[in-house]
Image (tube, rainbow, N blue to C red; front, side):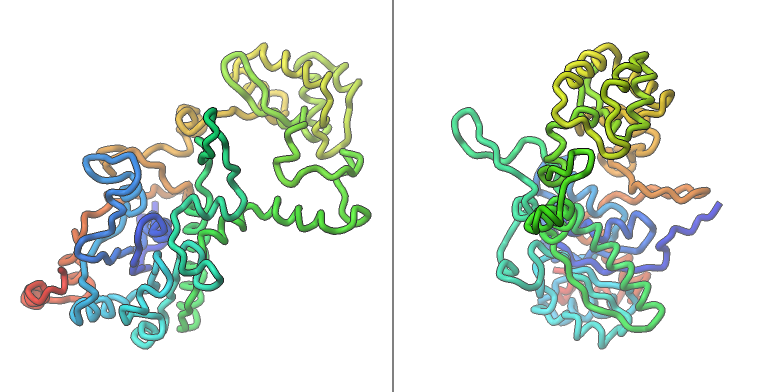
Length: 410
């Protein structure tokens, strides 16, 4: 069994503020050496949002697991020189904050590539490095509202509110796409000897992940003689994306006798398997539907039949039925109940409180035949300063002591 992690030997210098630091977590989870360079007062991510575990936020404990922290005062010449020394042997620099922050400190891409021509410089920010919004302050939900992913709700008193349950798309997908692009940049740099500068916006990522609806609306701007609906709907245009599922019947959420399930028999073969499996072949004979993409849209009579049928079994019984009869049925959970599912527990076993300070989900990547080590707990501010300077830069104790006295570490 291999003991070398996939990204062993890759080193990332991370300058981040709050959640965008997640871009480097994908690297640390796979064995890269990620060094988070913090100001002496630290990244205030440790106090942001909830829950707070033993005085430290879950946001920090997850985002910075597996990383090392070095505290530097980048307003001093010594601090700047240490940063440059770290860059000299690194693969990439991550600027996960407002664009241009490092450049204002004298650590922009042009300066750093003179030190290390292979360096890949990646900026991940809210609205990106260009456009009319580039200098606007923002937080995570903004990228989803900007991208059209969230509809405001109105409470019983007439106040407009953020919805209670919603995914945070931009703040999670932005770092994920950034990690993908960063790894591509590192791969090319190692082959050619030439680094590059790249930038991504969390708002762009939120919109990109909703490409199906956005591109459908654009397609619907064209003539109905050119852009139609599906043949199963007599070519009638449905609302974009999943909005068109509201009137679905063979693809719909139903109540079981102890919860809810999602029924997905949009292919004729699956629909036939379902009808035969429940001993109701007459349902298929009456409504055989089209071969593909047929949701029996608006069929109220069938909808009522299925409503009563699904109430007769538990969610677990329907899942067993799904496998036995080869027809797609899935459980419907929320963020609290999903981890109780046996498939979830098998695929995503939590890291323990003892390991990381709070139960955390692992990176969902499995290397066949290899067991991935548990990441180290997210660091305290500057926890690894001396370790990094000694191991990577080979500074001796006297030099480190002098740097401390001169205020390089704050």
